[in-house]
Length: 139
Image 1 (cartoon, rainbow, N blue to C red):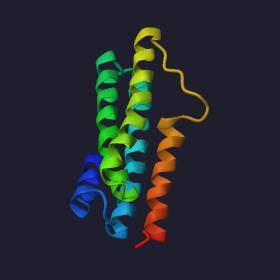
Image 2 (image 1 turned 120 degrees about the vertical axis):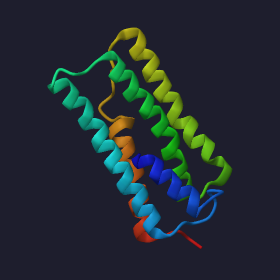
Image 3 (image 1 turned 90 degrees about the horizontal axis):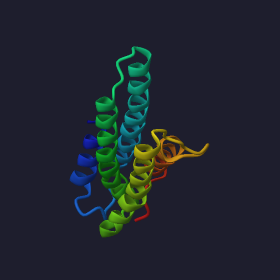
Image 4 (image 1 turned 135 degrees about the vertical axis):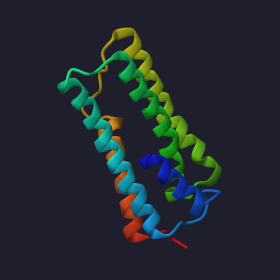
């Protein structure tokens, strides 16, 4: 729901993703992405800690992450004001996600490098949102 709210704000205040929304919208994009990342990391750890994890839960979590990828693309598109080119942000995030999920399906292990998208990549994106909220967009 965090990223659905973020994407909705981006779409409401920049319907074509080519105009600058108010600064508070950029701040909310960053905050909501941070909250999504935090809660997404905590729920898996909690499920493993309480022995309530299951393959269905993992599938549901990966499905939610795939949808989150699309919603965050809209939010980042409004921050970057890239209009129709926003689709390329989705491609750049969806292809590695698909590849990692495919690899996980066949190897039954999810191997991520030291610097990876689910942690440092998302941190870079929400820092871009916060930076834009502080500095503003060029007119």
